[in-house]
Length: 307
Ligand code: NDP
Image 1: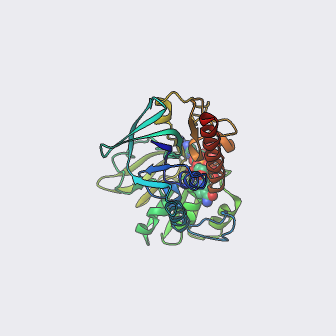
Image 2 (image 1 turned 90 degrees about the vertical axis):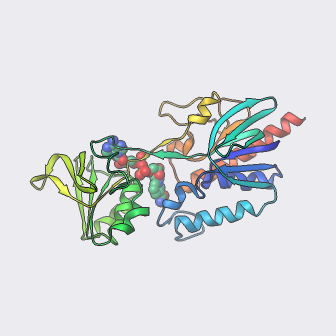
Image 3 (image 1 turned 90 degrees about the horizontal axis):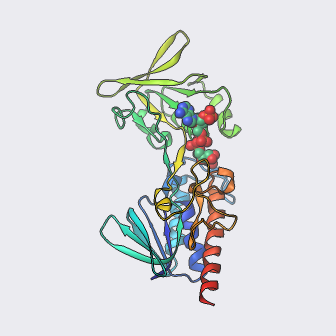
C-alpha cells in the first residue's frame, strides 16, 4: 500500500510528489496528460526564478524532478473510479489495474468550458478548438477568432497574432480579466481586432469552420468570416471522483479544502486548480504552493495515525 496516491500530472501533482518524496512517503503519481494544462502555456513569465520559460519546458523540469526520487512511481493512466477501503483508498485505472494507498491528493485541475452554441460540437476539431496557444500554429496566414477575456484568451490572441493574418478577439465585456501585460501586448499588434460587448451565437461552416455569428452586428455585419475559432472561456474543476468519495465542493463547484488543503473526507486532500484555495486564482505558483501544503498535511496525518 502506498502512503499517498496523487492524481494529476500537472504543476500541483508533480509538486505534491516532490514534497511527498522528500518526506520519504511511498508515492504513486498518476494522470493522463504529462504536464497537464501547464503544457498549453506558450510563455510563462511569472514563475519565480525564470524570467521567461515555455509551459512545456517548465513542466518537463517538474517531471524530471519528480521522477528523480526513488519514492515516486509515475503512471500514465486514467482513473475511472475511487473507493474507500479498510485503512485507505483504492484507485481503478483504465488499464484494468488497481492501486491502494493510505491517503489521496486530488490534483486533477479542470476541464475546458464549452460555449454550447450551434455548430460548436459539430465543428469541434474542424476549426473549433479549446487551446489557442496549442493550435494557432496551424492557422498561419489565416483568419481566426479567439473567444474570452481572461489570460487564456488574451495570451492565446497574442500567440495567434504571430502567425495568423487576422485575429478577432471576441469578448462579452469591454474590460478584461487578463493581466494588463497580455492586454497591452495584444493591443500593440495591428492584426488583432477587438470585438467587444458581443456574444458568439453560432459557429458556421459545412465540413470546416467558415465564420462566426454574433448577437449584434460588428462594423455592420453579424457574421465574421474566419477559418478557426479558439474557445477560451475558462475551465471547470474536475471534482467528479472526489465527490464520489463524499468530498464537498464550494458554491462555485471547486473542491472544498481548509487552509491545510484537507477536504471534508479524512485522509483526502486537494491542490491546484481543482480546489477552492487561493481564492480561485489559478496560477502555477499557487498550484505549487497548495501542493506543498497538501503533502505536508499528508505527512502530518500519517504521523498522527501511526502514533
Ligand atoms: P477565466 O475564468 O479567467 O476567464 C474566462 C473568460 O471567458 C472571462 O473573460 C469570461 O468573461 C469569459 N467567459 C466565460 N464564460 C463565457 C461564456 N459563456 N460566453 C462568453 N464568454 C465567457 O479563464 P482562463 O482560462 O482565461 O484562466 C483560468 C485561470 O488560469 C485564471 O486564473 C488565469 O489567471 C490562469 N491562467 C494563467 C496564465 C498565466 O499565468 N500565464 C495563462 C492562462 C490562464 P467575463 O470576464 O465576462 O466573466
